[in-house]
Length: 263
Image (cartoon, rainbow, N blue to C red; front, side):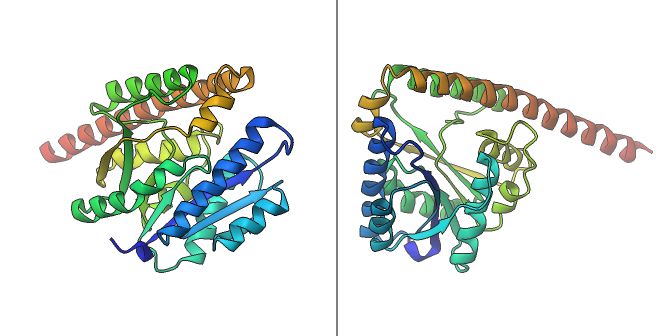
C-alpha cells in the first residue's frame, strides 16, 4: 500500500508543561512522529500549549503543524480532520491516531491495504491483549468492548481511539453535532452510524502494546483513574442511547416499507 494515499491526524496539548504525565506523553509523541517519518506517513497535528522544542522537532520530522483555533474536544478533533483534508487533497484514507501510541504506526499501512481489499469505508483496530496497560485502563477498555459487542453483535474494540476511514466517510465525523457531550463520543458515535448504515467496516486484529513509559506514569495515578470514570460516563451512556435510537429508526423504516408494500 502506497503511504501517499494515507493522511494521519492527531491533536496535541502539552498543557501542564512540568507534569510527569504530560512530559512523558510529549516524549512518547516524538517517538511516534519519528516512526511515522521513517515510513513516510504524513501527520497533521492541531496543537496548543506545547513547548517550542517539541514543535521544532515535529516540524523537522516533516509533520504538518496547525495551531488550534477552536475549543472543546469535539470541535478540536473536527478542526484536525478539516486541516488534514485540506493539506492532503489526494489522500484516499484518513487515519486518526493518538500521540502517545508509537506502537500503532506499524498497523497503519496494513489497515489501508485491508480496507482497499474489502472496499470498506471504516477501519477499526481490535487489540489482541490488554496486558501492557494499567489495570484500571484495561478494565475501562474491556468493559466498553463487552457492552459494544453485546449490542452490535460482533467483537468491536469500541473505545480504542485509533481508526481509519475513507475520505468520503469523514463526513460522518465532520457532521456530528455533539449530541452526547461532544467529548469522546465525537469519534465514537459516528462509527456507530457508519455501521448502522451498512457502509462497510474492516476490523484488523493488532498485537498492540501500550508504551511502557505511559503505563509507568499512569498506573495508580488518581487523576488518570478519575479520567477513566469520566470516559466511562460518556462512552457507555452515549453508546447505549445512540444504538437504541438507530435500532428504533430502522424498525420504523421496516414497518413503513411493509405498509407501503401491502397498500
